[in-house]
Length: 87
Image (tube, rainbow, N blue to C red; front, top):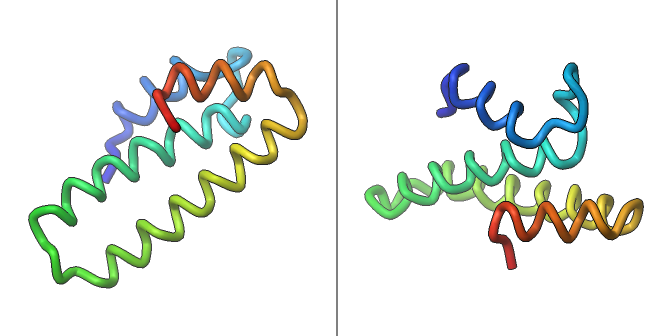
């Protein structure tokens, strides 16, 4: 679970302008952090299938946001992938 403090630091790192909270970059960064935390949870609790399903949905959602960003602006997509160390 992401705390408010963690969320604000992620948003400040990836926002495009001062009041940006919903751009694809911010959403992908938030999803990536949630995915990392949930993956570490699932390493401890291997039989937690409900959380595993949520993880799979988050990964699919992140992939959808990345495809959208790649389609709309290739440069922003490449910089975000490099910044978050994806692929």
